Image (tube, rainbow, N blue to C red; front, side):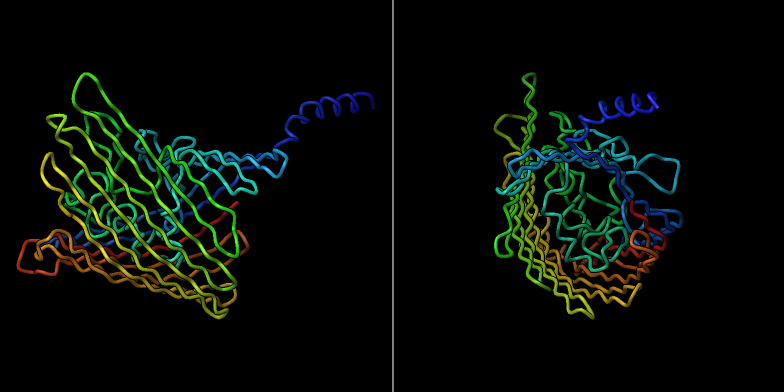
Length: 406
């Protein structure tokens, strides 16, 4: 009896400090099969791939710690990681612009957050609020399947919609746009690697969210980074800022967002600055009718490239609209969505492009945490002037599998 009392006392002594906070482990596992087909370029270079993949959602492992600070204040810390549920790899092998591999602990997100009556302040590595575009542009709820403007290889916010390259200092340099770029390069003074195109997962993000007042709230985002080497002329600077305003009342939800990102580096002389600038604006809305939920969005994106002392040149000028519907039928949910738009690119009419796509999905809930899915979609990017050499592409994907969250 005494041993039990002593053991309980020791356990209580060690547990007492942990009473001030809660630590939880959560995540998501997606295991499925994917078939992708692509037709790229005027020579109709065709390729296809079939295999296991996380086809609906990104598989993640998340550690969350929360603490009540008193006075209405709450602190939280989040560390999340990617992992590949369908292979021996511990992650997807990519690295962010701080050279941190995605498949390491915290490779997806790592941030601290303070919340109170003033709203919330979040600092660290995470996706800024500008990426909430998919909430309205992806009626099916998945961007891992082709067919939306937030799909891999056709992503408005990442900079690949319209065949633009996410990871080159020249957004027009991508020669095989159906493929997802393989890696982010480091922010150094010699590689000219910081790219204005990519506005998704970022490091060094500071974000403030206001309290909700009469259904309205707003989020301000800011990112800034620089590397300057005194031994040469190469200095890199990057900045990003954004604003998103949300409104939600009953069945209606509306968001309006704006973001811009600039990268610049010294070229041959201190007077010459190479730079890329990207600007995104979007508005999205959803309305729940009960028997169906409707989605709509409109977005614009413009990218400018400046080479040394030359005048800035427009390399991407996108305008795209989406519509979608979600139909719940008990455990089964069906969705359909489509988008249409154009990319005027440069001032020349010969490189204008038509952007089109559609996606169909079906989800069947096996429980509150597990569902089966099938999704099919197509992204299509066509140069409107057929008399010139082009890199038209069509990407079609069919995915099916299971998702379990815990």
